[in-house]
Amino acid sequence: MAIAMAMVLPLMAAKPVRKPRPPLPWAALEARKATIGKIVVEIGNVFDLTKPGENTRIGRTADHLHASTKESVIRHVLLFKEGDPVRTRRLYETERLLRALPFVKEAHIDPVVQPDGTVVARVRVRDAWTTQVNAGFSSVGGQRSMNFGIDEKNFMGMGKSVALDFSRNFQRSTYGITYNDPQFLGSRWTFMAQDQLLSDGFARAFSFGLPFFALDTPWSTIVTLTQKRTSLYLYDRGLQIFQMPFVQDEVQWMGAAKFHESDGRVWRGGLSFDRQDTSYGASTLTGPPDVLLPPVLTNRRLRGPALTLSTEKDAFESFYDLLGMDTPEDYNLSWNGSLQLGIYSRSLGSSMSAPYFLIQAANGWSTSTEDLTLFTASFSGRAPASGLENGQVNLALTQYYKLTSDQVLAGLAAVDLGCRLDPENWYYVGGDQGLRGFPNELRPGDARWLLSCDYRLLTEQRWWGLVRLGYDAFVDVGAVRQFDGQGWTRPYSDVGAGFRMGNLKSSLGRVILLSFAVPLNREPYQSRFQVTIGNSMRF
Image 1 (cartoon, rainbow, N blue to C red):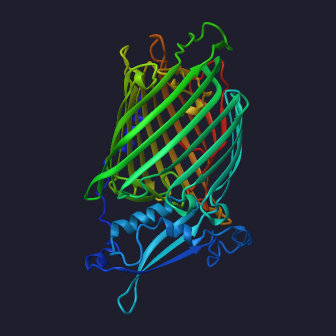
Image 2 (spheres, rainbow, N blue to C red; image 1 turned 30 degrees about the horizontal axis):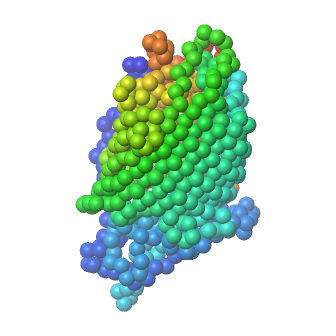
Image 3 (spheres, rainbow, N blue to C red; image 1 turned 180 degrees about the vertical axis):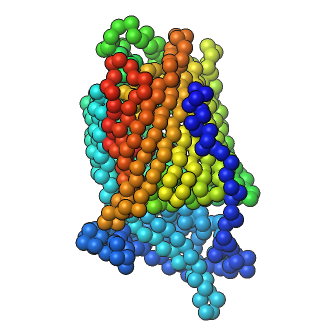
C-alpha cells in the first residue's frame, strides 16, 4: 500500500498561490445599491451558426430538429426578479444553477446599464443537445455486459426528462423507464418516477418534494418510495457463489428549515422518518463449494424518526477540462456536511430497538485554476444491543492537477471500512469497483482500499463541432479485507490506456471511454486483458 500511496502523493505537491479573481461585473452595481429594472432572457440553439466550424450541414440539421428550451423554464430558475436590488452572490448562484441543468450548455448573466441608469439583467443560455444515447460494452474476465438507452433531457423544450434503457450483464437483463420533472406544474417542486422490469423481478422508485433549491431557500420536504423484488447475488474470485431472493420496501420522509444564515453559510435543521422492510429467501449455492461461507441472513423491519442538521456554504468556483471537456465544472471549496440521528423503536413496529445515524462531510481546496482537491467522508450504521450493524466508514480523496492546459493528472484514493455489513452492502474489489484490469466482484470483504492515477491528454482535434479527442493512461491498485479473519488479499494492480472522446454538445461534457487494461498480477482463472466502452466516469 505504501508503494501505491507514492503514486498519488506527487499529485498533491505544493501549488502556486491562487491569483485574485477579476472584479465581478455586478459588484460595483451592488455597491451603489442599484436595482434590476428588467430581465431579458436569450436562448441560443445547440450549434452557433455564426461560427464557421459549427455552421455545417450537421449543425444546421441539429438546430432544425432540436426543440429549444421554453423561456418560462429558464425564468423559473432565476433567483431574482425585476425590481430586486442587485445581489452579486445570488446572481452568480443563478448562473451555477442554470449550468447545472442537463439541457443547458452555457449560462451567463450580464448587466447592461441603459442611458437612463436602468440596469437590465441579460440572461444568456445556450441549449445542449438533450437527446442522449447511452451505450456501453465491457468484457471483464470473460464477463460481458452491455447497455443501451435513450434519454431525452428536455422533452418538447419543457425541461422534463424521459429515459428508456436496456442493459444486460452476467446478473440480469433490465428494461427501464424513468420520468423526471424538476419543475412540477411550473413550480419548484420536483417529481420522479422509475419502473424497471428485471429478468429476476422488478424495481420501482418514486419521489416528490421541494428541495433546497438555493442557499437561502427557507424550507424543504421530500418523500421517497422504493420497492425491489429481485435476487441478491454474492461473489468470490469473480464467480457467483450464492443466490437468494431479495425483497426490500422503503419509505422515507424528510423535512427541514433554514434557521441561521451568515457570510454565505446556512444552517438547517429538521426531522425525518424511515420505514424499511427487508427480507431474504433461502440461499442457493450456485458456485464452487468451500470458496465462500454462507452469509448470515436476518430479515429486518425498521421504523423510526430522526433529527437532522446540515450546513452549506456558497463557495463554488468553476474549472475546465478536469472531468469533462469544454464545459464549466462547478465545485464547492468549503466545508459542508450533514448529521442524522434517530432511533428505531419496537413500539413503532420495528424488529429491533436501535439508534441509527448518518454523518457526512465534504470539502474542496484549490490554489489556482490548475489544481483541485476534493474530500468526502461518511459514517453510518445502526446500533442495537448486540453491537454496531451495517457500520460503514467511507473516505475518498480526489486530486486534479493540470500539467499544461491540455494535460491533466487525476488521482483517487478511497478507503471503505465495514462492521457486520448487510449482505447487499458487502465491499468488493474488481472491474466495477475501479480495478479496470480485473473481473467484476473479484473478491468480497468488509473493508477495502483503492488507488487510481490517470494521465489525461486533450487534443485540439474536434470533429463537426461534436466530439473532441483525448487520450488516457492509467494505473489502479487495490485490496479487500476478507471475511472470517482471513486478512487482507494481496494488492491487485493493473495498467491501461485508451481514448477519451468528449461530447461537446452535452451539458455535462460527457466523455465516452474506450480503454484497454492489463492486470499485473492476475489470478489463474481470469483473462489477460479487459476492454471497456462506455460513458461512466469515476473521477
